[in-house]
Every structure is written in C-alpha cells, then in structure tokens.
Amino acid sequence: MMQGKHVLSAAKNPIRQWLIGGPGRCGKSTLAEAIARSQSPVSAMQVDALLNANLRLGSPGSVQGGKEFLRNYLTRPRYMNPERTQTRCPLDDFPQDIDQVIETVTVAANMSRVQLIASALNGLAKSTRKSGWIALDLHPEFYFRSYLAQIPELRLLVLLRDPLEAIAASLYWQTYPMRRAGKSQFEYFTTLWKLSAVASMALRRAFPAKVSLYSSNALVAGEAHLCDDLGGAQATARFATAYGGRPFFTARCSGKTIEFLCPDGKWQQLLSDEEVCVIERFRRSIWAPMLFTSMPSASVPLAGPFIDQLALRLADQHPAMSKTLVEFGYFPIRSIRRQLLYVKGRLTTIQ
Image (cartoon, rainbow, N blue to C red; front, side, top):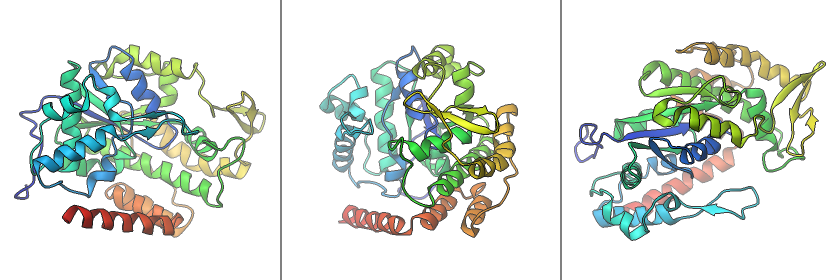
C-alpha cells in the first residue's frame, strides 16, 4: 500500500457494500428502486453514486475538505426523468438531515472522494439499521479493480439485458419516436454493450465471490432471483412488477423481422435487418454463455473499425482503457473536453 493512502479496512468494516453496473438501458435504476422498496437487508441509494466521476480526483486533503465535499455531494440534485422535471439527491435516501449525516459519517484527512462516498453509504446502512448498502453507478465494471484497491469489501452486481433490446432502447431513449441523432450511434452502443459484457465476465472469473451477473430478462420473467443478501424473491418481484412483466423495447420475432414494444404500446421494427444481423453475430457468443454458465467466458467476433477491435482485445484485462479508446474513437471532441475538465478539476483541487 502506498504511504499516505487510506484504505477502508475490511476487518473494521463488516458492512456489505454493493454497486450495480452494466450497459445502459438494462434496468439498473429500476433494480435499485425495487430493492429500496422491498424488505431488503441492504439500503439502496436510488441515484448514481458517481464514483467514476470522482475516482481520479483523489482526496480533498483535510477533514474539513472531506466534509464539504460530502455536503455538496449528498445535496446536489440529479435529474430523474427525460423531461428534467423530477430531481432526487443522495440525501433523499437518508433518514437524517444533512448536518446529522455529516456529523456521524467517518471522515479522515487522507480519504479519497471514492472512500468518502463509501463512508457516507456506510452511514446510510447504519442509520437505517441495515447490514449494507447498494448503489448504481455508471459502468463500474470498467473501474472495479480501482475501486477494490480503496474499498476492499466492495461487491459488484452486473445487470445485462438482451443486446437486441438494450441497444434498441439506447437508440430511442428520450427521443422516441425519433432515433437518436448521429451516424455512429448504433456502432457505439453495440461496441459499448460488448465491452461491458466482456469486462464483466472477466471480473466474474477473477472475483467469483465478489461479482455477480444477472439477466434483467430472466429477473422480469421470474426465471432468476436476486440473492437473499439483496432482497431475494421479494425484491425480484418488485423489479418485475415495475415493468408490468414486459419492459419497453422488449423484442419479438414477427415473421422474418424483429419488432420491439414501443412506449406508445405499438410493436415496431426499430432496427434494420442488417443491424439485427450485426447483433446476432455476437449475441450467440456472449449472451448465451452468460445465461447458461456460472462462470461465463465468451469468444467475441472481432469486427468493425480497428479501434473497436483493439478495445475488445483490451476489455478482458484493461477495461478502463478499452472504454476510453471507444469514447475517443466515436466522440473525440467530447472526450478531449472531458479530459480538459478533469485537468481543470485537478488543478482546482491542488490549489
């Protein structure tokens, strides 16, 4: 361990700590809400934990700085619907007011922002008299090893949805009946789903006691249940009920075409036959192994642009790098802006 770094002690911290990860439009927010509304042994935070956004920012540098960071983190609202008319902040899941939370949360001068967030969530579990906590985050499967270095007892639940449905939903989320603008959107969401699945399977093999893979399709259909540590059958039933047994963008075969259940209740062909064929090529090699084996391993067809192929080769052992490559390949200007914002944030932190 590097001198001066703080690590949340596994021996002194028996609280169960979970993150929910996986590709977009797979049901992560709905799962967190289902766990929160069931008699689960863990408390659920129903907004993104934003660990990735804080991973590289290090420590605020003092106890007072840590408390100020947590005060801002816990009270900052996030939009909860596409229309941006509903907001929620992390504090909404706590039974205390912000001053009480800050007073009771463990804060040390050398704790990183990631550890401070985990410490606040530990406080959530204690204040609600639960054995642990669970929070969703943006693609934690790409950064799990980095999180483990700071939170040794952290576990990961990866929620994967049939790629046909997840990719179609991503292309039409917030824009239906119009498709998301941009020539490369289909390729981007397709590659990101593959990277997430490959990285998650690698983590499952490397950390079998810490990483769990679930199919949202199987949970909705009642063909699988969450473990008892997360609410078991009751939380699973609430998850399925939230979708009425059939989530939007559920796929079905109609003759020779694939149709999807749309938000207006109609079944429509949202993907071209060529796009369906592209997904089917890797769907057989990734989706099926995940459904039918406890320790899945996939041989992913390497197709498409060179940067996609390189990213897929890296996804098994270097998932964070693979995601960065894909983001830069498809959205170079946006990626450069994010890096500049990161540098700006680091300079502000140093000052």
